[in-house]
Amino acid sequence: METPAEPRAHSADPNLDYVYATLDGLQRSSPAQAEFYQAAEDVLASLGPELESDTHYAKHAIIERLVEPERQVFFRVAWMDDKGQVHVNKGYRVQFNSALGPYKGGLRFHPNVTASVIKFLGFEQIFKNALTGLPIGGGKGGANFNPKGRSDAEIMRFCQAFMAELHRHIGATVDVPAGDIGVGAREIGYLFGYYRRLTGRYEGALTGKGLAWGGSLGRVEATGYGCVYFAENMLNARHESLEGNTCLVSGAGNVAIHTIEKLYQLGAIPVTCSDSTGTIHDHRGVDLDLLRTIKERDRLPLSRYLETHPEAEYTPLSDYPTDGHAVWRYPARAAFPCATQNELTSGDAEALLANGVTCISEGANMPSTRAAVEVFLDAGIAYGPAKAANAGGVATSQLEMQQNAGLTQWPIDKVDARLREIMTDIFNRCSATAAEFGEPNNLSMGANIAGFRRVANAMIEQGLY
Ligand code: NDP
Ligand code: 2IT
Image 1 (cartoon, rainbow, N blue to C red):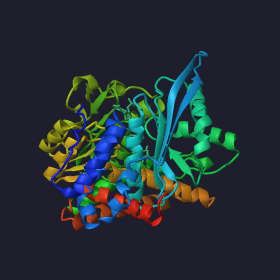
Image 2 (tube, rainbow, N blue to C red):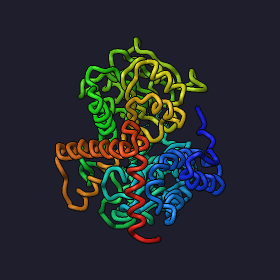
Image 3 (tube, rainbow, N blue to C red):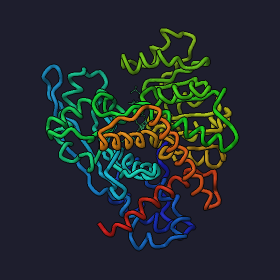
Image 4 (cartoon, rainbow, N blue to C red):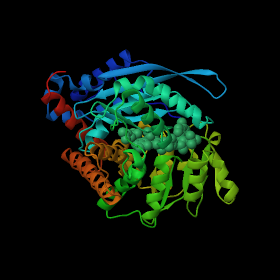
């Protein structure tokens, strides 16, 4: 995998000196946090034109305050497996910024979780949540726990041990976690059950809940559907559409599955999916029912797909040991990275362009390396950065919070209509902001500046805290 670009110590733009001085400071105070540094550099390096037009941000030390989480909780999670063996994992909740509302963001259970990974996700979440236009701050949490191969009873004991500490720090108007990699409906159920037991409160302290106990219709689908709605917005602005077009999707989890489902509904043909073991290419279109059986019901590796469809192509992950991933090496019109961070390198980006891709909509968080993003922006294709394109999940989580606060449940049509509306608003916000600076196609810059403005102004208006 490509490593993040080395930071530039100085730049030709004097407004970026403030930015790079902050990034240098960050590298000294938070060494060895490559993912966090990458996310911070992506946002901060876009801010030059905004800092030039509005100089009061420096006086308020907004950049320095934004990169420092308001609070970080690191805790031990000790739990017992089915054989009576005790295990210890590291638990995290980073409460990054609450200027716009209660901290909001998912929990990730994956063995590669570190403080850096949680901080990058929490930092991204601040701007993503701001872009939704809804009253939610930014946070993220998780653990370096590997759920693979664990029984339901082990997952339950782990979730209970995790919540034994987390419950002190969350609440419906304080901090509202949800799912992310390795945390789906099953885990949210165990976490919510234990939160209730510990606090005695039946309240919306988590989102992604079951439909019978406070969940919102449409939340499970929202990130994937929203990511496709965002692509549709980008293409419509270019007088194009997804209908009839071949699409590449990576991942085989919640976001990938619902991206594939919505692509089919809109008449597109998704031909790939991938997991941590390899990639499937099925030129007639991915068999969605089979994918769900293998990954959602049975939790098995994707190679099982070949047992039903031996004519599909399977490439093990190990076939791409250095720069790139098989999933990005097929002809298509649009691509939807929906697995994990830095899964799409500059080599992949070049291959996508060469194979006819003109639209990228990021379902995963920070799936493209900085070098890959440069390739997309230089080519002028429709590029929807994660913090805009995958905001439909957290936006629908906020709709769940609204329903919980009103002790009600909305019909699916209402939730889906709101989701479509929110994704269009985000697209319009990003492109209008980018247009202010003469680069209407640069949605990355538009997303970063639009998100930054909303948070920064709220921080200034609320005084020093
Ligand atoms: P899931 O756990 O449901 O699925 C994750 C998928 O990505 C799995 O197919 C998994 O493979 C694969 N994957 C995970 N880590 C790696 C890795 N290191 N290398 C290769 N493949 C990997 O998670 P989600 O679908 O919820 O999340 C996917 C992405 O979307 C993440 O970046 C997440 O942050 C982002 N996201 C999720 C939202 C949500 O609402 N769930 C909202 C916004 C963004 P395997 O099955 O082998 O483990
Ligand atoms: O990255 C994300 O936006 C999520 N994992 C969803 C967060 C949420 O609170 O719904």
